[in-house]
Image (cartoon, rainbow, N blue to C red; front, side, top):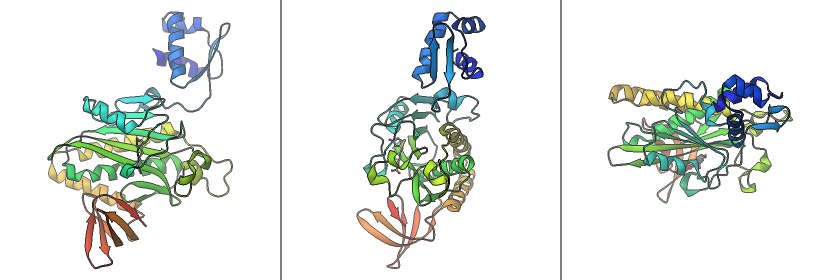
Length: 335
Ligand code: BTN
């Protein structure tokens, strides 16, 4: 019902609709209308109230509530259930909690801001309020724990495709899953897993995308390496720079990931191998790592050489300067 009230206000954007009209048209009391209006306001909608004229919805910052993201989203698993928060410590931490309590496969957790966003390798992740996409997706894949990297590659492909579709630029992916524009990192993915030796109980794909940040929105220490879609898509001359719809990008990621995930999630080994190969091939098309000289930190050792390929389960193959060929499962690569 709350969303019926919202849709009436949306249909009369910027105009007042009286509480009486809303209550009559929707068949609920005026007190109920008032309660729904307050709930919508708490979700970030900007609604003016006037005792004489009623309620009026104003164009404000884009709202990415569960309703806005989920309404009309035609996915089968990913994003079927969406949990939305104004603020969380970390969407990954919350997603792990509800995953352990048994939430549905594909549940997405979205927050407008994170107070303790987590990055890879124990780092933090700067997550400014309403500037970016801070989202975690709970998955329960049938794959073995050692094949998990393929899900991370799949997530980076889904993000790259969504950016291409919404921003009309082609991003690059730095192994394993940093999405770059103009050599600046616009997206990072933190994959966390809860597993037994032979099976994954759940994994959480944490996706952070810098969308509408101006450079001042980043901590100073990050300004050299981090970028936002707004900063990196405009080119030199575009002033003022264009803001992008976080809602459209999120919907696009959920739709892309839904297709890849359902295809990967099969017990048929041949079908799985075929799908994994397609993911690896697709990832390579976006790769800015393959063919480049890289340094990889692995178990306290530094490998230096040329990244020649990735394996079918997503490990990076490096032809090292000492003549050895090494496979790297995780870690930091600099090109
Ligand atoms: C990286 O270091 O590159 C990974 C960054 C991942 C950040 C995202 S934001 C949403 C989710 N919640 C977190 O606390 N981290 C991930």
